[in-house]
Amino acid sequence: MVKKMGLGEGDIQVGDALPDFDLNVTSTVIVAGAIASRDFMPAHHDKDYAQGQGAPDVFMNILTTNGYVSRFVTDWAGPEAMIRKISIRLGGPAIPGQPLRFRGEVLEKDVQEEECVISVSVHAANDLGNHATGTVTLSLPV
Image (cartoon, rainbow, N blue to C red; front, side):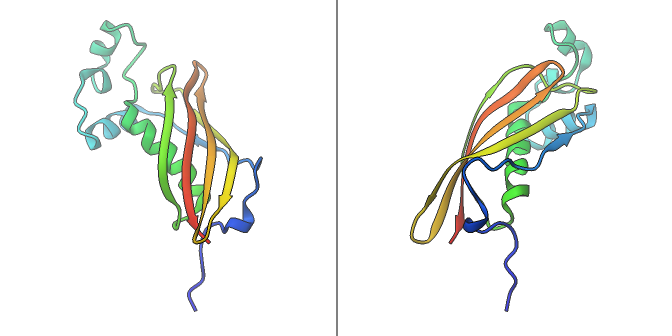
């Protein structure tokens, strides 16, 4: 018999907090995310350019932010989770030396015939303020 990993729908309740996730944001994290998402805008790898645009340093692009939001939720939900939708709003920049603190809470849970659809609030912030806020919808098999 194969042991099921991750959360089951019975383990999840509205109001549950997700385990905190703190990301050490470095220049390497920012540049690697930009390269991986084929975003070659200089503000994501050239500090002088970023500062010339009014930013304090190079900053994380939205695709990298979305990737870390997805990781935050799937690390909690487990390998059987399927992300259905990520809806976030960007705020302040994610820059080197400012760790991002990810927090989340279960907002809704809808058990259907073959799956459990869950909505989670997500909040990622650093000392500069909110970097990303929004919701993630995912499903788990029942």
